[in-house]
Length: 500
Ligand code: NAD
Image (tube, rainbow, N blue to C red; front, side, top):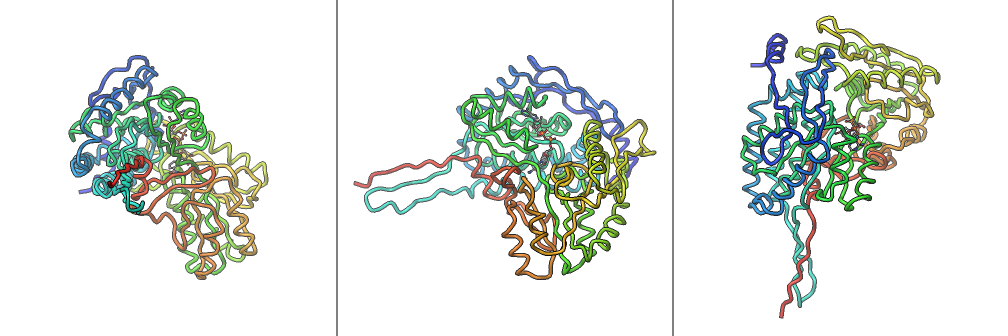
């Protein structure tokens, strides 16, 4: 039975989470970190204080992961045995999905229905998918001639630091943990400052699932301290990072300044959504534009934040987008009918609003939204923003170039297909793009012309675990999801055997 608003409020009042650092299979107190308050953007309330890891604590976590990798059973288990552990963890996540969804909703403001049905479903599916993938990681025997045999095997790459953001805290953790653990690596997970509680609950479940000690460690803490210490640590072999381009650059520097660890980056985006005048269903294209930018309060790396629309249909599309925006009026994230909650924090709200102010100074126009709002059913002040649509945006404006990561849509118009492609391609990012047209040849040509990890045709946000996901240019490199993700966490070893 699905829970109602009152049920979630009651559960929230009783919620308790572990607070420590999860190292070597158990929760420990920090040696040198300063405790960190967790503030809910729902109502500005401090939910808890969690332990933060300083450098000494990061040392302890990496040492535990190192021991588990160098001496423990995990990398040496049959892949099917690792799969059993991952399946058990998936089962426990499924069992505790309500509590985990509640943690996510309270800590970063995601509507509870999305937390429960999207975020938690994604984590369970990811763990199950990679459990099944664990023994599909085959090597090769190239034809090296008659006198020797060359075996190319894939070996687990070692200790992985998984540093993740707050916007999909458990989905992102799952996209890292699933393939890394399936491949036989051990992991230190570093959640974002804004979303430590759900990760601590996941750690508790890892212990209950019987993962050998040190295989998964979870350390919360500020990026500049805990994240940095992981990035610079000589005991870490691989960093898998999802977050901003700016912090992605830091990780490349940390690697260069330490042990040249491998760094995989899934970064930001400024994705164009091109609607041509022959779009098959203009209504669907417009509805998808609205959903894409307002879902998760626009805090989605692939959000179609630039609507690039043909002038002849722009008014009709815009009218429909504005009408759809009403469905996303901000509401209490704990109410199951809410489609858009707050943005993640007061600080982030300030940053989004300042982007809107600059856009207005630069000549854009607000079609709808642009103001912070109060949600009457929530006591206290939360960080809520109206769904916002800006038109008269031109390519040089900041709102057309920078990732805002909020519910703010920038509308740009064009006359010719060439102009549309030029507008869409005019970005330093390369995560995703979409094109709406009836003409398949045109769709192919536009797709080829755009440098992006994913191009959707007549849809947006289609995805499947079997399909790789990631970016190019300032959106990073490497792929999450699919069997390709296993490549990030394995090394190729060649063994030559002489055939006398
Ligand atoms: P962020 O870069 O600020 O933080 C991400 C992680 O890095 C957090 O755990 C943080 O603590 C840590 N960090 C911050 N500063 C650090 C430093 N100096 N050294 C080491 N670690 C540090 O990103 P965010 O605000 O949490 O998330 C939003 C960003 O994530 C957006 O840019 C979004 O596009 C991106 N994102 C990308 C994808 C993708 O798959 N491409 C998916 C989700 C989010």
